[in-house]
Every structure is written in C-alpha cells, then in structure tokens.
Image (cartoon, rainbow, N blue to C red; front, side):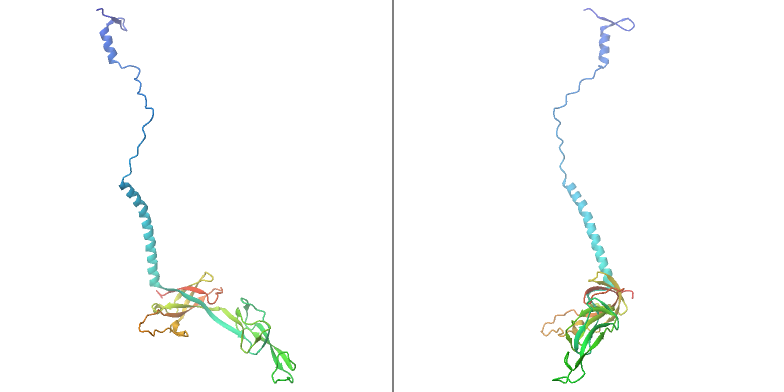
Length: 286
C-alpha cells in the first residue's frame, strides 16, 4: 500500500496519518443546521386557579367593605350617644305667635278695607272704615237709626291697627256688615314669635329655662337660635276638651307630652304660624 505525503508550510512532506489526526482535532468551520421548527406551535395551557386563590380574592374585596360599614356604624353610634347625653331633641314642635284680631267697636257696614294678607301695617294706621248709622231726626217706623234710611246719617268710623305687624288673615270684605267687636283683620307681630315644643315626659326634667336651643324651620329650611323661656307645669292632654282616660280594667300607659316655650331669634325673618319645626335643646354644661 502506497503512503500519501502532504507538504506542510515549510515544504516538508507530512504523513497522511498526521493529516487525518489534525482534521479530527479541529472542529468544522460551518455549524450544523438547526432542526426545522414544527409547523404549528403547541398551545399554552393555563393551570387552573386553586380554591385558596379564589378565597383570597374574595377576602380582598370583602374586607374593605366590612371596614367601611363598620366605620360608618361606629360614627353613627358615637354621634347618637353624644346627642343623647348632651341634647334633648324633638320634631314635635310648631311655630306659634300672638294673633291680634282687630275689629270695629260699632256695628255697621264695612266701606273700606284695602289691606290684604301679607302686607305690613304700623301702629295706629287706619286699616278699615265702618259706616255706622246715627239718628239725626225722626226715624220712621222705628226708634233706632237704620243704614241709609231717612232720619239716619252714616258716620264713618275708622279702625286702627293696635300693633306693628303683618296681616295674617282677613275676615270681612267691603260691603258686608259687621257686628260689635267682630274681627275684620288678624294681625301678627313677627318679632313676637316663639316655638312650642312637646317634650317627652321622660326627658322634660332635663329641660330648664335659659338653655340654648337650635331651631330648624320646616317652612323656610333655615336654622335659628333661641332659648327656653318656660316649661308648662302640665301635660298637653290636660288642656284638651276630652282628656284621655283609661276606664277599662287593663291599664295601658300612654306617653305624655309637656309643652315647652322657646323664644326664637328670627333675625327679621317671617316664620309662618302653625308650621312645623325641629328643636335641639342643649342640656349639658349649662
């Protein structure tokens, strides 16, 4: 067998066995081709969520709601305890004032009454005029003076306002006849307004004259300040025409209400009489 010779760099022939060993030791210059990718990638399958993870998510949603509800409940309870210890409150109250009914001291016919409800009047202002018949001669068929009859003269009698106030009601119209003392107008002084609050008999012992009061008018929606003027020494049922009585063998206790008068600082506002109000009487620290 003939031995092949290879010439090296120095020109010296190398044996074929050395050339073969050198080829095995040196790696090939070109990398092997990568295997072909599959035509379709395998789908990614998500692992099912565990029951522990679902419970944790529910707790993360429920805990903030429970904390908010608890905070609101604590605030309401704290405010209720504070109000119960420091105030006596009721919605059973209404605005009250002194109505002054003004009329003529003589019987006659109303010939002038120009004021209407809501208008302001001043003391000694003429608010109406009544024509009163007076006898000036022989009155036929009668000994009394008659309106617009022969022998009679209609005297014009003015009606004056006794107070500064506002017309609350009008009871007569021009042309109608009025009797002695019959009311023509009802006047109210807006500065002489108070609130009558009915306090539970279990709470009225805590109310004393002079205590400060916060009054909220249902008609105007405004809040005013005032003070307790007096506590009625009797229940509201005492003044009713038919006081409640238990005549049967079984006694049922009925809560009684005690009227409390509260003076209001209206600051010039007009509060309609008879409208509802809520009061908050401060009983602590006074």
